[in-house]
Image (tube, rainbow, N blue to C red; front, side, top):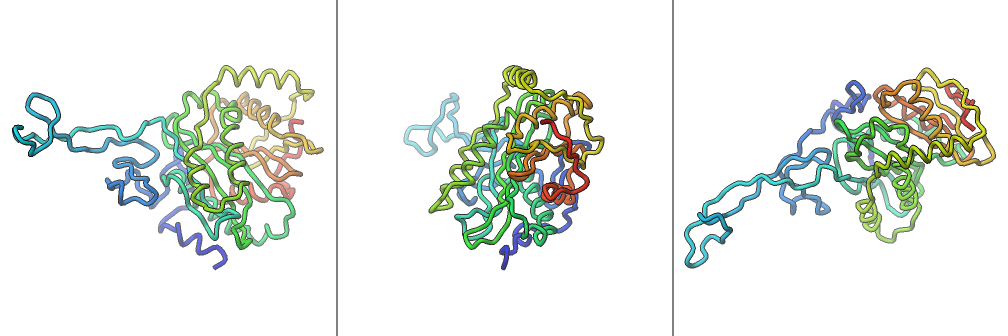
Length: 341
């Protein structure tokens, strides 16, 4: 099959077009349980058995501990010991601040569609969103010369939870096209109050993902190991704020461009001549925050080598939004051509 039945591999009955929901907070896509069943570690592929966890939240698991009457541990049946009493003790099996990363899609050194790393409802829901959106534009993408790549962040499940990742055009070993999505989710302290500085916090993660996605892997398992070894963003807000202020002061842009009133509009970033769009993305996010301090649901920036954009989405993402993201570099009239250059 052209895509090995990508949709069939992850299709769940009853999934709505809008995979992110709630008033500004993504919800678990229909068909994905909020809590995973208690599964022994040796029954989970890839050694990912975290009993009592669902990947986005930590739920205590039960472990049997045997104790002597005096309180110390003993082994049942050891000569000279009294029969031990079995007690159930609740222990945390994972740190609540721990980040989990995963990869979905096609990699040039993989035979077909891959699904690597930690599987959580949040990460799988975004992969489904990419799948459904890309299915509607595959025919339109075949004639495009530039490959698209987008860095993004979005709200996670619950306060303090964040998602950051990269989605880019890619192919498998046989040259069949499909995006490669690498992303992670976890807690990031106080990010809701400093969301305009998230590009600085996520930059090392984005750069590492982009590097890993461009490497050659004789064994795709090495790619998975590298994905699992990614580090979470760091909330160094004071340093990021100072860096932003210095970059704004050094910029020759007057900063008087109007912020688009609709989340579906995209802001042109590059200004031509192959200029780095990152400072412009930071500057525009700061201006968007001045207009509305509430953190948006998701922010994407990137595009192609010749056309870079920033897209701010305050409403929950829908399938049509992926289509806009993937086709805006073609010069759709819905984009705002005046950028922060």
